[in-house]
Length: 366
Image 1 (tube, rainbow, N blue to C red):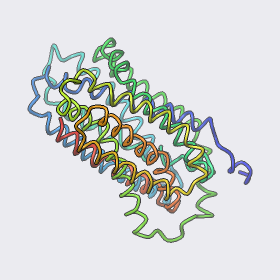
Image 2: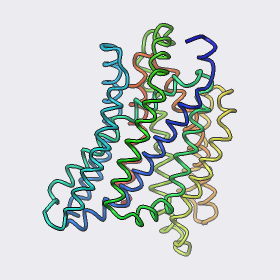
Image 3: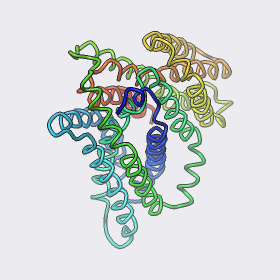
Image 4: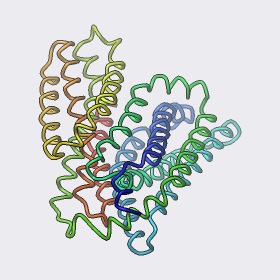
């Protein structure tokens, strides 16, 4: 690979990763829609708290483990896509198994195996997240990573903003067909991403390792990445888990709008993130991250002490602005401060840290 090639954005690979992330978001929306229904229909609602806690632990712990394994396999065998491939294959398979179990639930008792399969699905879904997202360093020069993240952020957050539409679709499909479609989406987009990016990733990885940007990985780098991930999770937790219930409680006259405010703000965040990504790529990432922390802190304090619904909405928009800035700059900051030999592990730590407060808020405000 020539130096000129490494200085260009690989849009085909970026778009294939965006398609995979879209499939992941749709799968999560389907999971959140049908998991309570399945547990109610099977008479296992007493396991709801267990499933929330299990999900939170898995989302925090599995991405770093998967990243560490991917880096180890690359170092020992020179292969990078193994953990990714295992995660994609297992997720698609579990989707199909669950679809089959749901289809046979009328003739046999599946209440004992469904929770187990859900846990396996949660683990497999998080096996490929950190390997996939750490690959963006192979798709763009370091200074252009925020542009790549801007595209990914636009796709994922717009889908989350359109959750009512996605929910309507999965409700129309029904539980069995939804899980079949989910398996096809994850398997299909995972296969396309693997096919499109595998050669590019390995060539670029070889080049980056030969010219590693970080010779010795200091502990302080991991601590900084954890802090960025935690603040990113704080923004998402306030917008998605805290805001709807808080708005309904603090402003009871506006309860019919509680669910739509979060969706609208996520949509605005998606568009804003895409629009500012080029400007962020020309800025010092550390300064962008610090600014995002300050903006989020102002928004959180304003929301907590707000007694006016319009002030609460304004506070949520401020939090959304900080959340957007942290998203566009956070992953590039993590990658640029990690050795190529440890980048997947570090990205896994970043992703896991971003789920800590989201998981806590989901449990507290369920």
